[in-house]
Image (cartoon, rainbow, N blue to C red; front, side, top):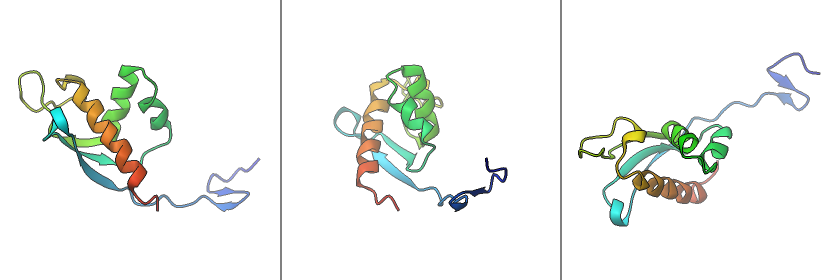
Length: 107
């Protein structure tokens, strides 16, 4: 067992790279919807985003979507992702996040 949390059998714990963000846009019905999203987030969020459990997915999306221009049911800016109307817009933007993650250089 290794007592030092800064070292492993393979050497020191690696440094985390600087986090990257990208602005993604919705399409079709959600043309004009834009969000700044993180490209680098904890692995545990992947399980949450793909869980199929909407409350878990929305909580994870709230950590990945850093800012957005999504509307609520009155047409005002939704300050909470749970207030976005229609909610399908959040999922449309997350689909674009998947495209962005697959196309960006992992380094």
